[in-house]
Image (cartoon, rainbow, N blue to C red; front, top):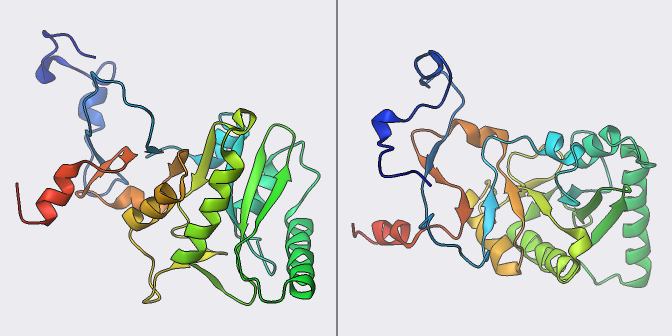
Length: 240
């Protein structure tokens, strides 16, 4: 926390002339981070942290998280983050081909033993120091719905609850995906806020990494955690 003498005009970010050289303009991928909450008060941690500007794959490989939540399907995951992770983690005995085959075998087993069940199951891939919880896209769907996401994260939250060895946990945003698209009732990608709400209401309290496309949203401001400040709802209702 800054001291009383640290006025904004006295603060600098970079050595030498870095502050002048790195003034962001419209050509740069950027976000405008807005403060939310009181930094002088510790909250109870009942929130989702949003990791703006960070790289999920690099953080996972570096061991910053014990659990990663992403998506998987039973057709093709060559363009999905689950395939990239399996290739990057040196201790993995899985690859994108065997993981996809496992997802297909799992769906075939469900079709035989529980043909009326259309729940988004969670497939676990234990890569020694990293656990992947992959939400399995429902059979015969080429996308995830918001209902799939909500129900999938209800299961994820139960699998994380009370299991300290599975924390910290990080999830993709499920937006901007190539292999496992998330769409709303109108067939479009839902707002990031709707995704965060579904995760939060399902009981998830880990971190979420914004998609790369969201790094270009300036001048719209973003918050570093969810739930968002009440002031946003007040403004949407016409207040100040």
